Length: 141
Image 1 (spheres, helix red, strand yellow):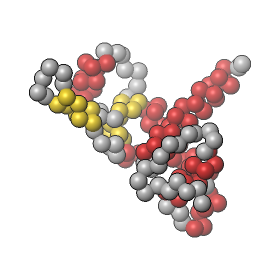
Image 2 (tube, rainbow, N blue to C red):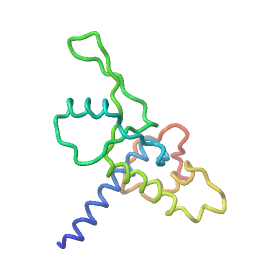
Image 3 (cartoon, rainbow, N blue to C red):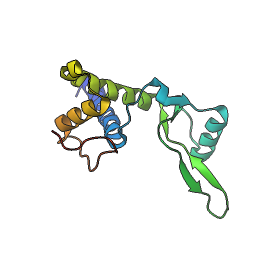
Image 4 (cartoon, rainbow, N blue to C red):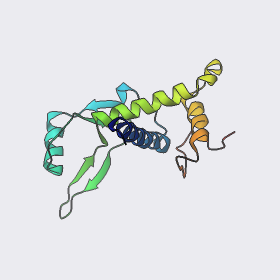
């Protein structure tokens, strides 16, 4: 296997992972969907995960933070949905792929949900979707 083919396969797997997130959440990610972590958030991240950062980190604005109770304490913290710059790019690329793969719908001025449903039907065998988010059709028709 050539390095290019290996890189292509890695990219494809990463893009499929991004599409899975899009299908699970129904979110039409755009550049405004992501905000770089603040210095305090970076510090918290580094403290929690104790690893070197190789790229910038972003909070996903459209995903609700989770509430986590700290063990042995009466305190709770908000846990943010965080992605790396690479993951962010793959999510944006996934949305672009949905738009470019459904260009035949352009004349009908479809919503993202309609494009999403069309793409979901095309990929239903490759990406297993157990349930669709609210507002997203699963009829396939």
